Image: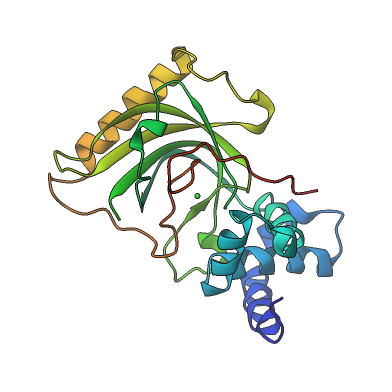
Length: 229
């Protein structure tokens, strides 16, 4: 899938591993080829080479990228986790009523006129793969989130959706479930972060390739992602 670009990413990963030997600890027991291959998949994903992966995972037939998505997920497990608020700009669905506080939301792709603010529990930081680049938090494909609140962003007409990542072992909650104590605590933290982060009207920095609404399609219908096996 990467063709000659694999070697470009692999050389960068080799330099990173040489300067950060601690990263090899996460791959203890694996071959050098497996370690490099997984990290190359992640590095390629967070670059322009990842554009097609997101688009395909949200398509009717994602089979062409399922193997790549599996490698990316394996590579993400080798990176440090991040607990805290994650901001992402994006496109609001045509039916914003799709986001109901307490409702579960599942996203196939690996996370404009909407601001998504997620309380991350297991998202992975990718900055160690490219020390000179901005740190980015990536969630594995099929990650689940719970809608905590929906309101205008910083007093603007834009939609702001506050979500909490549901760790893989926790399972999805039922639609319409009330917020529990963990949800309420995450919501309070996110609201405080939003209040402290930016003055009213200041746009949120966003990745140009992450423009799709989280957990729903463009019409606001709940999204059911494919199995990555």
